[in-house]
Length: 332
Image 1 (tube, rainbow, N blue to C red):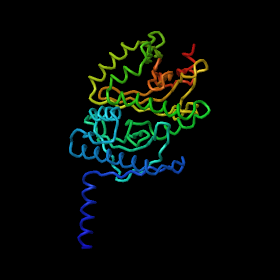
Image 2: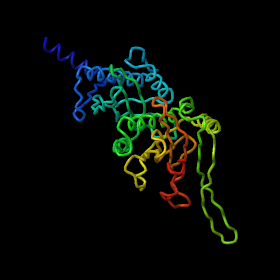
Image 3: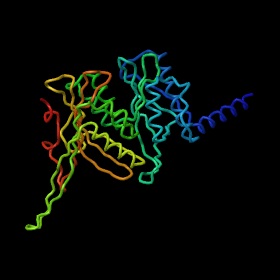
Image 4: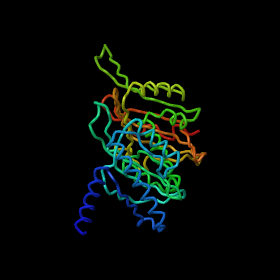
């Protein structure tokens, strides 16, 4: 009998490995969260979802989310991502610290392996993800996340913005980035305000025939919401794959202690967020600074009034901190 049980356990373990089964442990030592029953529900729900993602990846099929403990919003977000790229969780054991919120719990830093179907990219790429739970343990949000260091820097902004609002800013910045990666024009249309101003810098080199010297400068193109979305739609159509990464500006030598977040002196619901962006697609790549002016007047549906992009280098010289757009350039 013992031999039979041992053989069965070995067979079960092999089956779990082949199907990509994932066990989840959510730790809460730092927060002091002590609802163990609800914590177990969250762990089970996330474990089932990650196991299904791995099975769908292995079997090269669509996700089956019918029986998953997820609300419609979370399912829609995950399906949108899956329609553009497949990925899997390479860890049999996922152990992450849970961050309690008023609405439930946030889990960050879940590592996924992405295998884009595009010869322009490496065969495998690491992508971090975040998952939110509501107060019943159901998964209420699924999104790709900022890198660990950038997310941690957002968490050091107590002097600029309170914890709950800070976590919401992080959430919507992550959604904003994910929308580009999954070519989700509908989400971008929703997140930009109707009066949104989009400013894009372009490096222009001029050659002086008399002196024989070339000089580089930046010209700025202004677009409204519809003009920008039309050009973005063309980029989505031309490129099989788009990858957008955000990192903190301090990593580029810019003085910053708060993940690039600044708060308006005139309107406490307005925040400027400055990030370093890496854009890589099938046909085009660039790196530069992105500034976003967020309006959180509607907590559940914040909008962007201003988006700017500037190159990191102009004529071989790095842009100075004074040249990079910030909240002070757009405050009335």
